[in-house]
Image (tube, rainbow, N blue to C red; front, side):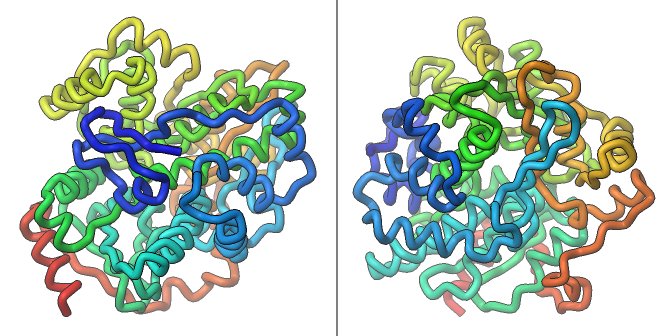
Amino acid sequence: MKYISTRGRAPELSFEEAMLSGLARDGGLYVPAEIPQMSRADIAALAGLSYEESAFRVMRPFVGDSFTDESFGDIIARAYAGFGHGARAPLVQLAPNHFLLELFHGPTLAFKDFAMQLIGQLFEDALKRRGERVTIVGATSGDTGSAAIEAFRGLDAVDVFILFPYGRVSEVQRRQMTTPAEANVHALAVDGNFDDCQARLKDMFNHFDFRDAVRLAGVNSINWARVLAQVVYYFSSAVSLGAPDRKVSFTVPTGNFGDIFAGYIAKRMGLPIDRLVIATNQNDILHRCLSSGDYRKGDVHASISPSMDIEVSSNFERALFDAYDRDGNAIGQLMDELGQGGFNVSQGALQRLREHFDSGRASEAETLATIAAARKTMGELLCPHSAVGVKVAEEHRDPATPMITLATAHPAKFPDAVEKASGQRPGLPQRMADLYERAERVTRVPNDLAALETHIREKIAS
């Protein structure tokens, strides 16, 4: 299995090489050169298996010879051992043919744990085998950072630096990043928004002297292994509802497009997905693009669903790559235009995107109303991101086709918004009950590449 860059000017890499590299050296994102297929029989055979067994069968073809069957199976087992639910990703019925996929039973109460716990174990295995050490730098709008720190803290072969926008994450999200005491993890509060954090991260990857000097690696959703791990729960949930004998649809609250792109990969592999519905909050560049073909950056507005406060959706480049018939030159041109503010998707490419994706948005008022209604009529307490998904799903679902809405975070990660909407303040699970009492360790840094690189070099050397 080989991986190629969306911009067509980087060498092909193995799964392990692509995972450890993160961003391609031509600025593109790695994707599989070919998408492995699962037959109807292969999909049907997932019924009744544990999540770990399904994960092995779905992901194994993408890994190639980077890991043996035995080591890959052990990695998966370790990755999900700390989840708080035996099903790992259980389904809850909200209404006739509408289901909620609970993805918040991992260590940091967010869907990012599915990918990050796995990638932490993959990194540890690969780096020990190679006798190498790397520096991981990540950018987060809230959940990726805490999941990365949880996955990598205390590991011998990794230093981790997480950039998050100062004052633009929830208190629970912040404390999950700033309270771990291990010396190899560092939380950096950047004066800016998430798009600024993401831009500085890409700048570091494109500054090759720095990248090579610190052995830079990335675990944002630009890392293919992150996307791959998320493919699994599309299969596990669809099979629970009757796939491959009937189609299902998914609604995904998303800002950076990685989680819904995983659904697209599942569909390309053969999973009978009818529609993939993109749900955005007021920062709705994805919905605007699918509606008009215009992909143009706007101002980022702080919201009660902060993990979606994004106006540059990095993983959308992967979808565009396929929509443009895998023309790396065309994607490079689009990304250059994005640097100047935005671009128009060609009519043919837009039609190909619309063959797979629908989209919708939820305002702040609509998000709060959905939280209140779900509590009253469904008995379900939703986080604001999941509420965005439920609202958009209700607008798009076909009564004849099961709709699965992804619940991306535990409501306790956003207690103020949930309490405002529902009148009930969600409590943290017992294992995190002392989170507000733990000492914080954080460094505030300017939105400046040189300052960030200097800080990282100094911390690695100390």
